[in-house]
Image (cartoon, rainbow, N blue to C red; front, side, top):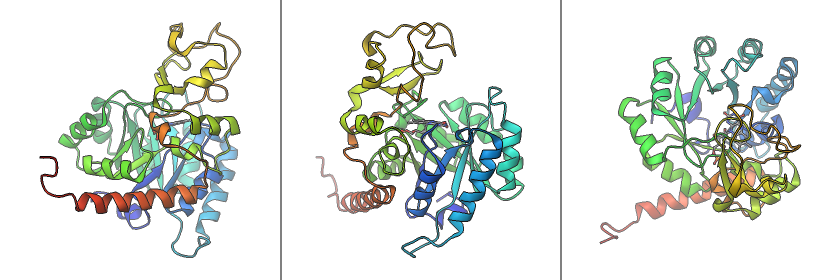
Length: 324
Ligand SMILES: Cc1cc2nc3c(=O)[nH]c(=O)nc-3n(C[C@H](O)[C@H](O)[C@H](O)COP(=O)(O)O)c2cc1C
């Protein structure tokens, strides 16, 4: 298994809790790591580089403590770094990630560039988030330690490629650590991702509907009551295609079936009322139909593990040629 030992020996499940703008706070990340999976948050969720510094100091100290049930140490954590020119804090935030020796840095949007050498200098890992085969090739050439294939239906700025096609194309030129993102909700989905050729799963939306996630109560309830038909894919709100909950769009007065075209990239909402992306327009992936409650992160991870193991057992027992 091409997963670096610094991860594979410390995880209860082959899984990263994906970084989510506003939603992934240190509390959610700590709960994910204590439950035995990698927890991740965007650096930009801290409102300044100084706040990021404080958050990481607290997180590192907290995760060094024994986990309450005493069974195992907490899993490593990850920070997501937006590597595009729009991120004016890039250099300052990177210096803070290096200072705290963040175990895994997940780069997204642009090219991983200088982040790779900086993170490798202390033995950390860099995973790069991609939505196209071309970007996966570029990331491999830049020397990253893993690729996150963000597929169609993923929450937030999801991709457009089908996971079967995307994973097998990346596997033609890359044998390193491959993560699959998009619509994974159950342990069975996680096993399916591994059978397809991914090493690790990457789950965002399922963790939005958890006790520890600090989003609005109404957002969590909407995740429980919505299904895949209610996920709207549009570039209207941010200039990039993203997946959002239709009922949250309806509340702003817009008709999800007749959305206006974006005015120009990056200017989605001009003239269409007073609402804020992420705060009022709520993102979610197409796997939302598998969410029926709002348990603790520990409970979600325990269920994922049970479902994963049970699916593994069922898979092994499939009678040969059962389909004929
Ligand atoms: C509310 C929300 C916010 C997100 N914000 C970010 C982000 O800031 N950076 C990022 O790289 N990905 C972000 N994502 C994408 C996730 O990291 C991940 O790729 C996605 O959630 C996986 O698909 P799933 O939601 O179907 O599990 C976000 C996703 C959601 C649902």
